[in-house]
Image (cartoon, rainbow, N blue to C red; front, side, top):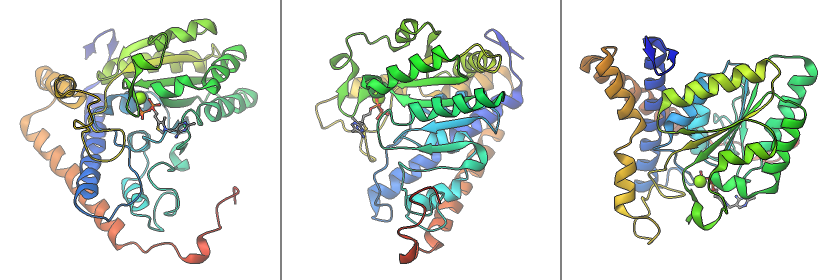
Length: 329
Ligand SMILES: Cc1ncc(C[n+]2csc(CCOP(=O)(O)OP(=O)(O)O)c2C)c(N)n1
Ligand SMILES: [Mg+2]
């Protein structure tokens, strides 16, 4: 099937659709739990609205490629293939969690699928992704490493240092900036002298591309090209994905009462929902029927419910676990 400039199979479209839906329904459930109970007490930065970025990027990767994530971690974790039950258990602080209940939403990892970790330190994982790419390069491996980060991370010096070193050494790393146009409550126009983040790549003689981050196929397409170049030894790419988070910076609220963003702005972006957009395309192409759609929703809802049951039924970590796993043991 030919869509935009690439051939893409209906199998890939289905996988994209299911992945985005798993992220969306998982997070809506988390939002619901946060709003109505105290079962989850760790701060959760929800990814709803940005699903096409994690999905499009991770679809272009192999299982043994590495991904490094941020405080807004759930979408990256699920898209790279992390186990949903163990993510929910982590949010519940249980010993079956992917970080044994000691990391919470912002510190998750699932190394079996190359999801190397997330961090609360803004921009903190960018140099880690570069370090991993440096190791791949020294080993002569064809693997690539991806750093996901927000627009706010581009205020940090380590972002520029990382771009410079990666370009200088032609490292196989893809820098994926999710420009959701806010850093906590600050709009990007109040914090960056030049809001065209992709342009910062040129200073370091590497390609920089801006893409519609709510178009999963476009994100997949540009990432696939960047990965191809990286595997050939041609160095890094900076991909700026323009997108928007529907909820507030942290927690389930829409933050419309804070005088920071308008209902009109939120509505505009909700009309550009990345999942509905792909759904419409798949209907049009005849590769998704109404019955299939209903069945996919049912399956994903069931998977999310099972993750909640698993999390609730799991025990809390024992007290003697408290000081373990701190220094790489
Ligand atoms: C080094 C550092 N500075 C400040 C903070 C506080 N902080 C947490 S999230 C955040 C905003 C990050 O914005 P962005 O990178 O755009 O990601 P988004 O939340 O929009 O996904 C800030 C400033 C932090 N955690 N780490
Ligand atoms: Mg942001």
